Amino acid sequence: MAKAKTIYSCTECGGSVPKWQGQCPQCGAWNTLVETLAAPAPARFESVAGTRAAVTPLAAVKAQENERIATGLSEFDRVLGGGLVAGGVALLGGDPGIGKSTLLLQASAALGAARRTLYVTGEESVEQVALRAQRLGLVNAPIELLAEVQLEAIVATIAATAPEVVVVDSIQTIYTETLQSAPGSVAQVRECAAQLTRLAKQRGVVVIFVGHVTKEGAIAGPRVLEHIVDTVLYFEGDPHSSFRLVRAMKNRFGAANELGVFAMTERGLKGVANPSALFLSQHGEPVAGSAIVATLEGSRPLLVEIQALLDPVQGGVPRRLAVGLDPQRLALLLAVLHRHGGVDTGGYDVFVNAVGGVRILEPAVDLAVLLAIESSLKNRPLPTKSLVFGEVGLAGEIRPVQRGQERIREAAKLGFTTVLIPSANKPKQGMDDVRVLAVDRVDRALAALRELQ
Ligand code: TYD
Ligand code: MG
Image: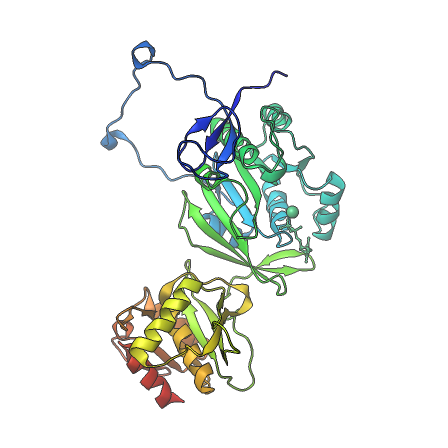
């Protein structure tokens, strides 16, 4: 087969050169040139024989919801915004071994009952997939398997067998003959994903890519992969616990930031319909350095324990480590605590952790982090059955969070009796079973905490 012409284009500035080199001659960035297929030379405007395309007045267009294809796994459907969409392309990223293949095999089995489903396996043999299916009790699932890594063969198979759903596990193993670079390289991943996406749109096929995650936590391959697809899902969770979260980072067909919660069992992933109390660790006695926050990422509140440990610095620069929380935000909170709360942590190593491998991205966790730090520093626990939420501002103010009532109600449902929250989130009517402490400044929050202890 004749090789198509390739060039090297810069991922920073978009400039291109005919041969690879370490530095982009146009913008001077290093290691940004990747192999790409050369587009035909652009024609001059006057010589382009285009036909006029039709324009439509907005008022003449009938609004239409996309028809949803339910996967049969309700937590998966939840993150997808109700199900898959014909012609929609999704990317499922996550660490190796987290459960991507398991989830997609389970989903394929359910989808296959009503729609022709093709599972392209580039990493494992069909026998290995069958072994997993056996473990999942899905040996007779109506799925067609294809062990293939060459893009052209996959495209031809899709054209010949006309499936309605295609899973590609994983996009990093697929390569096209038209590029010389190795499978898994930026150029290959980008080109293969782009071609399969085009095919999905043309034929109205649902395509789901599995994508590997690099050490830095990004989906390996160019960021453009995230721009090509309609939906980007990330699988997260602590590999040592059985709970797994699937988070929608981007969704053209539904809300981003929705969460699906699963438990990995001996027989595959099971949805957890009521996950709010999942990420609380069980302490017999209250412990210092622990505060519980009600987060609301996606549509359901989730109660998560935040732990802090402060330890005097053993010489050198104090360490700051945040697991499951934003490290930059931790630095900011320590500065606010010092400046507006009079609490100096300069002589301590500070470690904070969101229990259970969850990642909390919303600022409602700020106040819980602050109080956990203060609690560890003073070695005095927060009272049992207390819950904290609120965003902390640089001026030392405690800002309200969205849907505060819902968070308080969830806490009350789980037996929490004290809540420390932003003044602006204070419920208008008192609550019988919950004591509400509303604060608007960091120093008042610390004072309220000391009173409680
Ligand atoms: P897998 O889906 O292969 O992960 P990925 O495709 O993301 O690399 O899942 C791997 C882990 O899940 C593996 O350690 C075994 C475990 N597992 C179970 O605990 N129960 C099951 O039923 C299955 C199929 C896997
Ligand atoms: Mg896998």
